[in-house]
Length: 195
Image 1: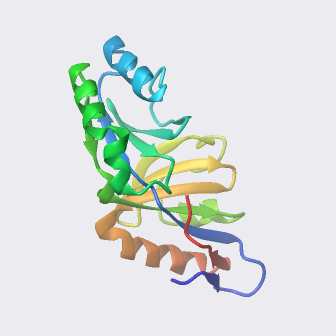
Image 2: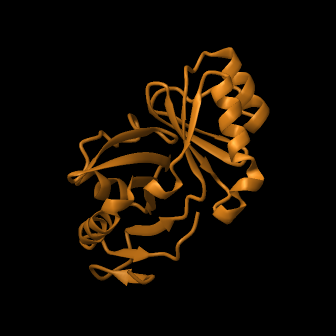
């Protein structure tokens, strides 16, 4: 859908923006493995891994917990072209993490994400998600996997009225159409894609 204003008349209550995630890796390992933490500290400045259902920023990288011994690592420099991946030393990262007892997989092509923000963003997401998204429970920098309708999704609360939702690329069209259909009742604006 093109950037613009949609749904009921009046000021938009929801803003939708495609996230360009850049490079994304699945990091696996034991969180209290000293050798793994030493390598992560050396590579990315990560002194400890996020606790269950939490996200944390480390300079150019953001980590989201996605399960026991598993995190998604987002390169926050979404402007960096994927062909520059070799310059980041991806193979070196993978080899060093593996030598420390962990694993690193490139999953950049597997997910699509959107930022859902505005005063009715929580209501929009709650309409298709069983998670308790109330800010007293799902605080900023909380993340969890659940469903959006019938599609598996990763939710991340960025701030009070700002969320990110990531789904498998194969379901992107279905989820986007469902987001727009549900947002129409509040009035929404599609914003130029960004980070």
